Length: 249
Image 1 (cartoon, rainbow, N blue to C red):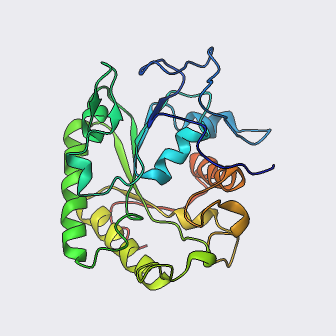
Image 2 (tube, helix red, strand yellow):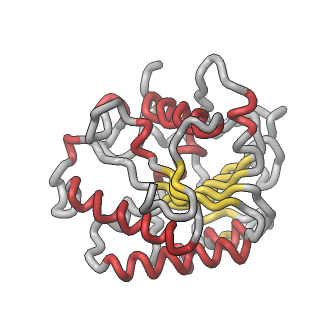
């Protein structure tokens, strides 16, 4: 599959099969996004994501940009540069009423069975990991209050490409390991699931393959397809998800 640059979608929210935010339905092909999926999809694995929400930063927004879970009812409430400081106050998500709101405002609009949370990339430059864990814990508790019946997954930060290694003092594998350990700590302490996103990388790879990214940090079509195939394996129960205490396997 040939790669293309992201940017074909103008909004930071997408809902799938059911029209919830005015963008599309399964019967109404999107003019905003291009969906990419393997030619053959296990229907049961895809159905695992029925009524799921994906929330967070620009990496979560990739799901919307490529309409990855086309065919099931799902929502994406994400925005570029959103981090654990801005998430509580920045009104960057279009709401069903036509206004703009915070990610939590959007998440409060309906009930979900699963909520997948993506933060950490924009926080690589943070050095007080106790503050990071406190902020992330506060967010998880807010999500729990809004979605008491949902299974919550914190998603680890998958690596960047080797070409951007040391572009900043914090784009190092060492800092990536630190932030992922903190995410693991938050998942353990709040009793939610932890999804290891590094599982979609080629075996033995420490970095995001250059051919899977357009800027070293975010996925192009080929990378998004590889990530989606990992998620289908998770839907089939073939991806390791840490339950309750991700620090102890």
